[in-house]
Length: 357
Ligand SMILES: *Cc1c(COP(=O)(O)O)cnc(C)c1O
Image (cartoon, rainbow, N blue to C red):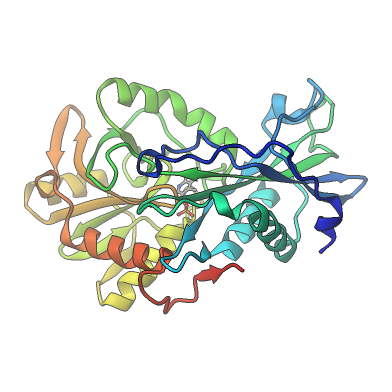
């Protein structure tokens, strides 16, 4: 493809991590990156270059007004050594819905997938094979136009960077403790909750830090109007097992990120015959359910951690333990099914896996 005409390989291949069992999340980058500019009304000059610093004006609009969006997906190494992407088309589709909300010009989704595949032809060898590890892929867009008046920028940079990662939480697949946040909120109706915008992450940091100081791994966000309905857990979608059914908050309000792992969990649940429901979940209902033994499991879902079991909820100075702080049966079943498909340990009946090569 045209990208290969603008292929600049690095003359300094970096050493790949040798200790795959101890990879962390997000501190190692592969050798190359994909870039594409937008100016004069068009996306242009797609290219692959050695991974390295960017040069931009201190007046670049992203630095002042946060006009930026991102995606996150993973490339997995199958037992036969082949590489596989998980639902990549859905990520690029979501990138475009984020772009629309953030006044960023839309991108050609099939082209982005081709670009990613070209990049992985060169850097796919960075994909680790240790269980639980993967090559994390971060596509993103930033507003690069030098201009301090407030309006959508006229110039942008789209990029893809990649890097090998281990489990997102140091706990791995072990229950995390979460703090139910009843003051700060993550998203408001009409706001940015449904898109992957850097600005939402910046605004979530203070509350997350405060929860961390109290010993919690993550926050459970409540809705910003009533401080009552469950939204998300950190940057994951939230699921509970209530009366044997998995329950998650609905997307209709526009305050919750439509996670692909969330959608995958719902599809897997249906296939495995686990009843599932999307409905508003009141924190008081949840606490009562915990006290009466009807809340049996809780977990978060997202690409980075896949599924993260929740072992404890702290709300208004009370600790509510879920399933004795153990991983629940339904959580484990859903995790096993998803991970087996992602890592190619069993055939993919869902049409989610895209084998490279
Ligand atoms: C990315 C993200 C998720 C998870 O989405 P996946 O597609 O499953 O990775 C959930 N919540 C927020 C706020 C996110 O940014």
